[in-house]
Length: 311
Image (cartoon, rainbow, N blue to C red; front, side, top):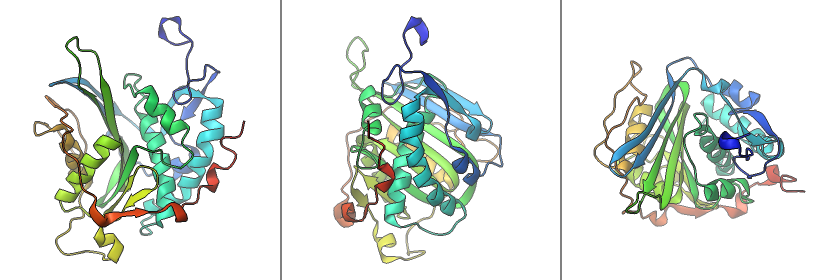
């Protein structure tokens, strides 16, 4: 039963069926992700107008975190095949075995959207719009339309598995009622950062990465378009003038979308956000992907979704 006597609804499909206990990561993904640190492993923040709406920090092993907001169909029938498809690709990345094929990265991108959104619910206070949740749940094209995931390879290996999420309330009316909500959620693990966001923020994050000279990434744009920077397309390991960043540098970059007034306090590890103050969202500029976009529909393997949508 939800607070106020309401029947609990599944986070993704909205069903009022019995909720199940679901780990953020299934066992085969937990095994692939290292966690050598018990320092900060989750940070949620919300922005409304000019002030900080929410700042939640979680310490401990996030791999053991679970939620009870999914029905059996979403937890098992839907999520499990997606997790099973992503797990071996993710394990290969964590073992530093190089850049996976693009079709494999799309499977990880699909999983990243799901787990990044679900991770925001571990505190019970980070609200993601219903229409976003349904779009994620019922996508038949892998990563859902109007969402993107950027993959950034880093110089350092992150000592823990860390989520970093931010929710923006944009265009509130005179009474303060919400008019639109957008958000992003980033997962730091091993040599990789996976940044998932709704399309508006996705293009803004792409812009920050590009302007900072970080081209060692692949960004998925909507469901079938892939941003393949020239450096990756040429297969150059260390192209002149381009940057392979640290986890902390990537975090500072994707948080630039909120404006210039971010204030960061870092842990002793030097790579984890602790608090934010006086932030604002101003999504007025986009990013021209130019000739970096590739349509990969012909190479996508969506067989892992077979039988997922059967009734």
